[in-house]
Length: 275
Image (tube, rainbow, N blue to C red; front, top):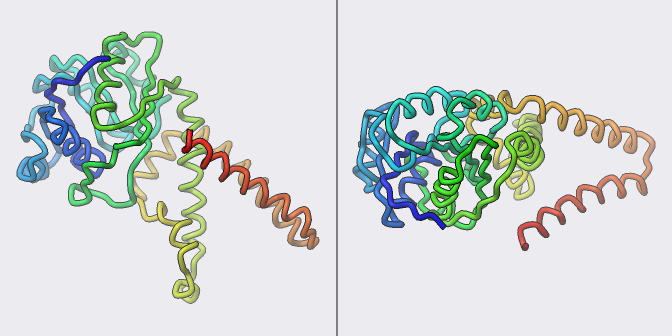
């Protein structure tokens, strides 16, 4: 298995980027930190997360782009003007991104660590954010084995499990497991009135936690994965229409069956986490 010797260039000192820089530093791997606002990179340096740089073409063993999905292609192309041999990212969608960077396929290996928080920015840094989490790697037939191994080694170095997935298949999987849940949490939160807010308790808190995430960031994510999300929204709409009908006719037995399908889905999630 490949080792990461560094330096690793991390650009984007939000939660994901700063936490990655902190985790790599804790693992003894040299880090170069970059942000579009240099003062943020300097703050990350002051906190011991790496050496601040302003030039994305600075040589590194591997570069990781930790910025909103819509900005990733341009940043990858800037880094590719330098000698860094492997470039990856943390973007939540992969199909369109990999396609737009097809000419850089030997150097660009898509990554998506399945972790995060509704908290944002450098101040939310968590050196253990990646530990025990799954990162999906999305190579293509044009990817080079050494580059794929280097990307996988990076994520293993901060405690991740790694799974290789086709880029298009990735987008369908995360639409089900991440993007639709965000949409449903947002709908639930949006329907909470000021009068009902004081009544909310643990159930509302747990169900809507992710609705507190950045609207701009999630607009980027949903736009980038619009095809897969639209299909799931249609399926969710069908289930809600079915629920409305069952409530209208008062069919308690059929309603219990409807709810049992959700119960079974939650069990699938729990079982998968225990394997």
